[in-house]
Length: 526
Ligand code: NG6
Ligand code: CA
Image (cartoon, rainbow, N blue to C red):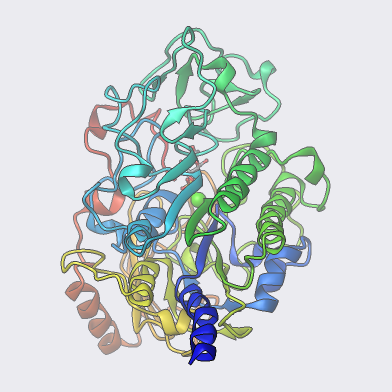
């Protein structure tokens, strides 16, 4: 009897621990399928991501919902396709938060299961009640906490948008009382020099837009004044954020935790730390991939050091497909060589082609998951339902409606993921949805503008619509739209049944409420 009790007292904590693995979701920015060496890159090496592939599952058909940042992250967090909601396209830095504090989120699922939750890195989901109402000099609410993060250390929007400061638990870090911050996306404020008027002050010059307030000798989208001591230094950003991420892991090493670590790499401006400069022949874009990989390495090392590796699920992915020239003259186009950022896929950031949303997607959990390559169709929108099922957290009826429980596919216990999946591209200014059904892909008719005028990325906009058979045409070059009317009709019907055939243009283009009042020239859109 005694012996049994003794045995049980050893076993029970171990069993509980296996039911409550830590989860770390590392989300890169603008990293394409082909930017990672275990997905085929040769001009850049990513040994730490490759280690996850070796020790875990490498998915070949893993997606974000959308081919740009804000909607992609919105959907990964809420389990809802972003085109269902107006105002979810790329947000300015002074936008209101688009995640409703009443909405169920992935991080709330973990909270309900007793986890400590933290967000470190890029936010870009809006904050507070938006422009004119955000006071950057106080606590800003609602923010990450109201969506379910116990701790947050974020950059509010993007590295190329003002305000260029970090927020820790929703307050600007390092703010001085006598140097308050103001932000504007409407026009020049204050006396800070702009890139437009003072290009001689820049160490990184814009190729498109990005000519407003200069911070750290880089001109940005949007204007700001004040907060001089609080402004970030781009070259230090990855160390600052990795330090916060490791700090969170150390602090919660004895209880289950969920960490959302959203790196700035490899978004523009690409300004890697000096340690990574020159590590690839591809200039800042390639070196920034190395810096991303190094951050994955820092997290892996922390898990090893703290003895947490065995029972921590680590997921690595990206928010949208790759882009080469994204608005700064960093020689990414000239130095690309034969590197294929989207791997075998067509298009990239902004596209409804596979290159827009099919991304590096890896999961490692040594305690339970056997190393494998999986072709299951899975998406970040599914994390919510999958982890809710795994942790036995009920999902209220009206929540996370597009999230499918694919936990068996994620853990490598089934080769089957989703039956079908809706991908969102930008299509220049048109807005495009595509339906994946097995290896078939249908994309709705677009405005016919083939390439983004700023990034030169093919968007997948065809005025007839497009149909591809990915089983023989992974690169989406042979449009079968005219040859298979029945299949097209069936796929359109399926899209329609999900509300995806004719969503209002404003929803799909993501026009911000009040956007009409804003000067169009200053507005930036993919
Ligand atoms: C575009 C910006 C681009 C990038 C993107 C958002 C221009 C010319 N382009 O409007 O540089 O900031 O928005 O990227 O301004 S994302 O990854 O956050 O979606
Ligand atoms: Ca992005």
